[in-house]
Length: 220
Length: 237
Image (cartoon, rainbow over all chains, first blue to last red):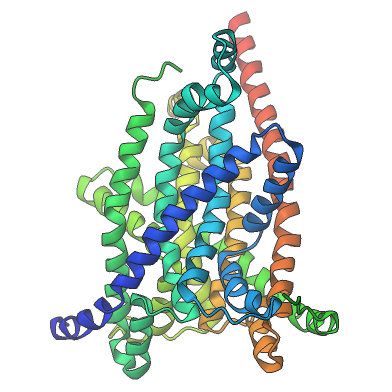
């Protein structure tokens, strides 16, 4: 068993760069899409609201693996262009998907901020933008924290899918190892699972921290 | 930029891909059923008071929940038969039920737990006072009150699982995604094939999500009303 681990470990490590790169990029873009879409959904402009909700419903209504295949295989065919950028397709699929899910949290948190806050800031003669930036958004942000932490773990889990479009992440290397030596399969997949769990641990603690922060010093 | 979309391909591929819908939906319900049953196992394991066991169960749940279901599927399908002694070879359909079922049972278990924690403490005390056995307490008093309020949440998980089921195509379950892949590679038309899959998912999951949302609102009103009624009765007495 120990020998098997020593043999398998360095092979999987070859993919760690890709896994971490995909995770970090997807996280950044997921939050970006989430905030943009979330704010658009509470916009005054009807067209902006409708457009964004179409995006959100499409990406929440279909599954991530389908979106990934669609972006990677179908989009280049649709426009007859030869985009062969796996990293872009992978990151874009994950972040469009989770951006859509998290935008609902952004929207929900903004709407959950007490009406009195809006009324008070109107009374204080703040503009609409100032109201959102100074008063509403900071209060909404702390309500988002626990759920945002949970989605961080979901995004990490989703990074394993990029091996399906041929990115050489840790799962890809594991699958190759398994296909050449089937008896190594238990070691390979157990190591992969432990690996993902170790990466998830800081995120689990971060989520708990987020829950504490969002509870601290709030009246209601 | 030319838009390269072929309607004839779309209509040719549609009936072919639709053949896989039964497998996809069947697998979804099979996984869901498995998770519903197995969720109870987690609930009862977590109620064991012995600290080390409790700690272990909590972390096992955390482990299953925070690692990718895709790798769990591969583990059950490829690695499990290789484990000496206890390994069993499973068909891809069985492996998918087990893999996705166990993964989501940890979520379902948490849903149950929230429902059970929502039951008033007085109900426990009253059933003890009425000399109910532990089994009667659970089956007659606690669970009938704990589970109905969680139905909308369980429905949400059904939709979430439906969207995770295409992962099973990676271990050879021939649902709509696998058929689309076959059609796409045979005809060099990935575009229409995958678009059809996306459409099928959207058409099935979007209305279900709306339905669940409505159910949730209805249930909330119902249980709130009940609570309000009880309060008013309490006040009168």
